[in-house]
Length: 237
Image 1: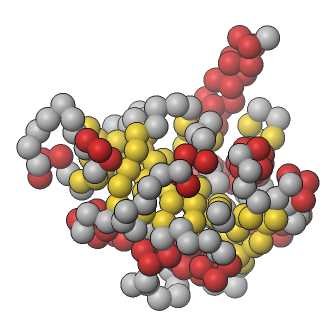
Image 2: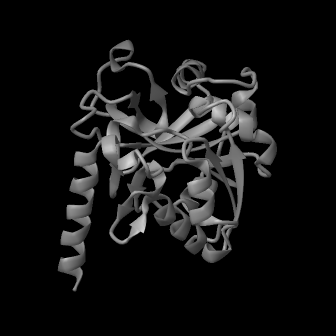
């Protein structure tokens, strides 16, 4: 199964850290964010990876090469000429490079110990399956509501309140069928409206992952993650 890693963004909220460094190449616990994903994908048996690039694109290519250092085959979907195409637009731009259907998508700027093989073991009845996480402090209200059996809702108040419903945050990890993007043309396109439409049509399922996960959206979160990983390493010694 092919994996796409989303790495085209500018990372403006990271301030000076990304003025001269592509955000996916920021270092945590001795290796870059994207290298962490690549190593875990290789360990899990994946081979083919597509990475979309735009901001400091050559820097990412120089750092990762063809993927052979990780035991992977990396192909790049270059958006430099048009600027980053946002999440859905970037995926549409890369569809011809994605050899499998369905395929996995991972945000480059997260850190997690999630087992990516769980996604291709997941029966996929609709157009996609999202990995959700408990709401972090920076997103206390969550993105969607997850129900029993992995059902997804836009808002909990649209349904009978129950202990079996809870809001959760989209982790940036998912598996999609190519048909999920059939309504989009080439060009910039956000993912959120597409997710909302598919949830309303009952075409997306979800799971709640409660293991290690961090969204590296600010310098403070990067520092917090680094500190947490250092403490875990110290305890493991």
